[in-house]
Image (cartoon, rainbow, N blue to C red; front, top):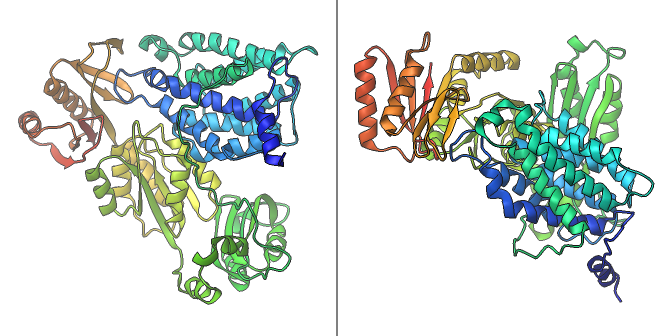
Length: 575
């Protein structure tokens, strides 16, 4: 029997009863079970929304995150646990969407670190990997909030690991894990008051429970039926096979990227000469990008002598990350589609120097997208509420910009972490993710900045200051009855939201809309109102709103923009 056929046979006849060691084949099967279980229940997770508005997307975000991992292992034929977990984790990292998706990808990244030397794992080893997963998930969040997916993961892992004995199996470990996840999830409203007020449990915790429940079902012998879903593989730059062999010629050099922590024992950090470093890199290579942020230097260069780059930088600090890729391998893999050496060199010479600043903005709605482009945004990442872009979407956007510094405007609190994760992974420019939590703050910040100022910190400070002057409000239909923030809401009402609080609810759409606009213009020092009209706004509604504001606030400056956004018929930006 051929080697692949033998492995396929082994994979299909895995005996899960009392299994003591977890290998790559079984992990692959468990991961598919987890993805299937979440897919089946994704809409239920979406509905666990604190606000009674139709923008719940946690289930979809987490589903697409784990499915990106499944796509990465789809064609693997390995029983090496470390190898499979690494591929699964990397796929999830690139495909992560929304804050819960990013936290989920970090949880699996921590597990992958814990298993990086394990061809197979016993319950104790896997339990330790789960603990590292929790640690990394917590560290990925600037200010961890209890009563969320983090709590559900931590409490379940602590419980399951504490119950390990010499008689434990992988099955008993996961049984304990899932049991405590159920109980921890049920406790989340007692920890986080906003969940209790809304009458829901944490949606991210629920998504994690469904995934681990799918893992557990596979361990208990349940066959997860093929649902016919074709998982899309997120593009990865690293080659999987090498056409560069002992007879190949080195033609294109090495793509070299370093992250260097400057050391006070080696250099004067405040006066470190970044221009001298750039000059050195230009002398030994091309496609040079180098910049310094506080005590860390990032650099990128194409060179035949990466060892010289390492030697030079070692004089001033120590390496946080080192990435060296053989570009001749990439060229060989392109085959007939690859340019010849002369053409490649010509193109390299004609590449203009990187500009100082580039801008990426997330936007939903053709009108808003056009507005951002007119304001100087280089690349639009399509997305918003219910359509959160992935980490890889941001990486692809960054690749389209040749700049030393790239400013990123997520324009949604649930997109911030994916943008930040992409920034951490990207090495060819310094990525600055601005805390724009809505279209309004992003719009004002992009408009306010002076991009002719070479001082990047001053530009960022200017944008942050502009965002502080903005208050945004949203108009949305309600999808369920609720009592929040002292406001009674009936399903089908139109509600108004300011700063994550529902401030008005009314059965009449325009009554609620006008009340919300008044609340914003009545705030201290607010006299300018920009109104982004969504795809669900109507001309007669705009006329009513215009008349109302003109009569009540004759001195206010009111601007209407046809944004075309989904979910919210009107978004107000008060300045």
